[in-house]
Amino acid sequence: MSNKQKKKLTAVQQEYQSFAKAREPGRPVFKNIIRAFIVGGIICIIAQGISDFFLWNFDFTEKTVGNPTGAIMILISVILTSLGIYDHIAQWAGAGTAVPVTGFANSIASAAIEHRSEGLVLGVGGNMFKLAGSVIVFGVFAAFVVALIKTTLAMLGGS
Amino acid sequence: MLHGHQTWIFNNQPIIIAAATVGGPFEAEGPLANDFDLLHSDLWLEQDSFEKAQKKMLEEACLEAIQKGGLQKQDVQFFLAGDLLNQIISSSFAARTMATPFLGLYGACSSSMESLALGALIVNSGAGNHVLCGTVSHNGAVEKQFRYPTEYGSQKPPTAQWTATAAGVVLLAAEGEGPKVTCATIGKIVDMGISDPYNMGGAMAPAAVDTITAHFRDLRIDPREYDLIATGDLGRVGHEIAADLLKKHNIKIPAEIFTDCGIMIYGPDQQSEVLAGGSGCGCSAAVTYGHILNRMKRGELRKVLIVATGALLSPLSYQQKESIPCIAHAVSIESIQ
Image (cartoon, rainbow over all chains, first blue to last red):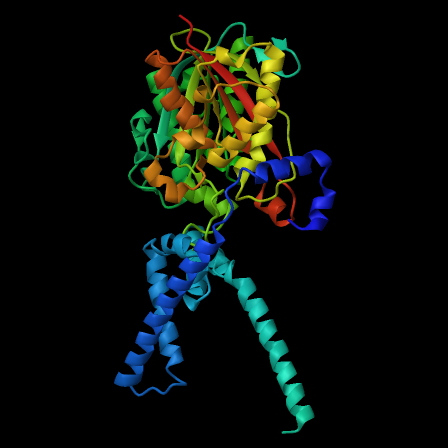
């Protein structure tokens, strides 16, 4: 908790919070980091395998192979989400499954499945990007800022 | 009637003539599976939404309780119920099916004892002869409303709790056979400034302690008069905090009689899923009306105190960075021959 928030608390509240904190199990950060490293790595190995498969067997280059690889990874993630397996892996793996594109696919698929009962338009359509929406908004904005900086530098440098 | 500041003593001792509990597939794997009247293998209960499944569980529990009590729907004068969904829709829709005069309640997970206390008050005062009190929660429906989609892969901290898929209903009557509701302590809101919805146990523990303290202060009795004191659903984390807080307040409850419904409902092999323990207003209702009443019937327990705790937050208040106001209501149930 930030200091600003803590200042608003009364003395009794502050005393209780430190009393409770001493009795709460903390997040196992080190264990989570190791698990995220292992699972995130495994996901990347699988994606690399798929990528190599496309490179060797089809007419793809290093530049173009990213698209079908990403599509396959998204498909795998959506299938695992639909079968109710992905969230169990994620509880174990943490950021390992959240950071790769599979996590992004899971956030959209899970919201779509969840709100199917409210219909296709108000339910699935309206809620699909409930979690992914802010990733897209800030992702696009960040890309815009980076592009702006790059363009400005290029103009100044005149190269 | 009113005893001390916030405790009611029911002189006419309303009787729990029947109780019914319904559970979901995950509860069926737990250690209390045999105490449920009805267990479902399908989380959807063959309905097309989790919300409808939650409503159906409450309906089933109500009908089962009425049947066990040897009554008809029209013999019930009042129906008091609550759940965790917005505008307590499951309770209202179940009341539509029941077609009995209905009072909807919201006390989050404390609704179970809130409805029992108010139902006992109605029967005790003679305002009704048969009153049905119940609560329900469904893992899918509640997680959807309060947290993330059920299939979303977010890692929960060890303090998080698992919403139980369960319903518990009791039928109170002025006359009949069964354990008696002898007194109730209505809690006040306690807010210790905790705003993390993944640490409900820590947030609710002070409310439970406040109500337990008030109960023993108002009645001037010793905790050892009870064979069992069970908090609603504080989970492992909150229960430990509550036990230590009570020691600090100099209320001596022997560790062997102090337990928690959220710990009891799931077994050690379900630990990795439920983390700190069970929650949801169906949890304390199903454990109390199933497991604990069964133990009383077998003569293993004579006098119990159930302290149901509720975290009165909403997804909106959490996003607006409000802290979690918490409450606890205690009801004492005795088997008097």
